Image (cartoon, rainbow, N blue to C red; front, side, top):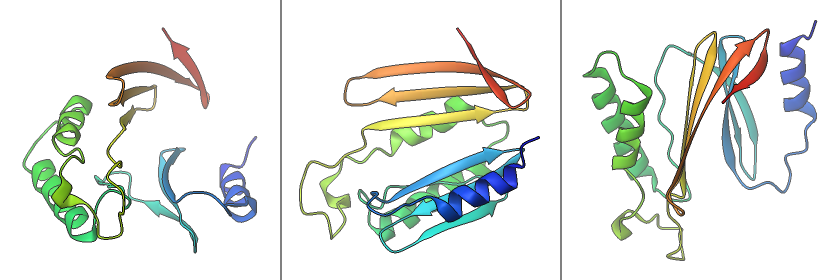
Length: 156
């Protein structure tokens, strides 16, 4: 039997993250939620409460004040609703695409950065529903995966 805590720990402690662009990776494993944040100066792994909502924004697209405002807007939207669906979250996200020049962070020196895609994953104990929107080529893909004994089986 695979010890997932050991595998996650070995990956976090032994993988060479040097030279990678900054990123945030959310990991769902055995009904636990983890956040891996990699930037030029550090790598951080922490467990999150999987019953709480989270909002992320690209630090290369948005300044701190705008990110904080979007998080506040998201929480206000989230806590005013019941039975939020994956489609509701996708529609919320699409309302806040990076398009406005006034939102450009102070450290952004070019004018070519923008939101290029949106990915949403909805997972239950039996399945995962994945939506991917390619905003550059106007492509939407949806995949459903059945979860069996920790193995993903693709559904057509």
